[in-house]
Length: 228
Image 1 (cartoon, one colour):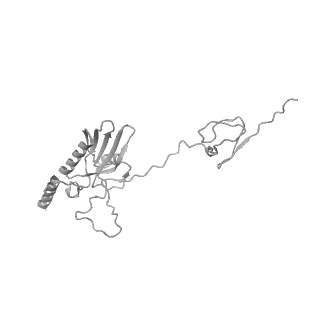
Image 2 (image 1 turned 120 degrees about the vertical axis):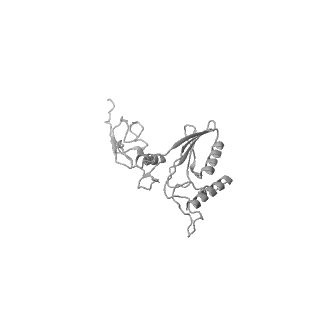
Image 3 (image 1 turned 90 degrees about the horizontal axis):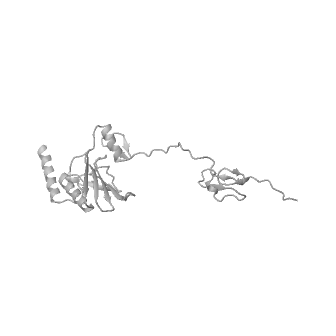
């Protein structure tokens, strides 16, 4: 007598999600699993990959709200300074001027930055730490030190310093976009030099003050006194 052939039975694939019934010999993907399966008499090992619905290609993720307020204190907020500059130019008709500077190394850039702050009365602080990109560059951003809102970290009632807070309560669009080459150390700076919401004020400059800064402060104080 010949061997009795048994009719193939349907396999039941169990998972935390809905049950699938797959016939032996099936070759293909089940649900969202990225692996192609050859189903025999043994159930597959990766039940967690099984899903009852294919991914929705048309689903749009919600847009992350911006946190950068408009320099002119309108209700608009933005995710990047680039979006802010576009808003200032198109809505408020106030473009932000740009300069390009190149330096041989980072030390030369810092010397230029310090000299600029001392002679103009505008200061800049590092926004976030330097970030290395795949392109072989290290990027960092220096924002105007008057930009932002004053946030006291003191738990009790504490008087502000004599000159008052250096924050203007909104965003100043002036920013230094610094790119440092990891290959030769050269530095390229995209300098957005338009300030909104404040004037040059050496009194609120960062701590690295020198004689030239003090002279500039006396000059501005004298001008304010004479203009009264």
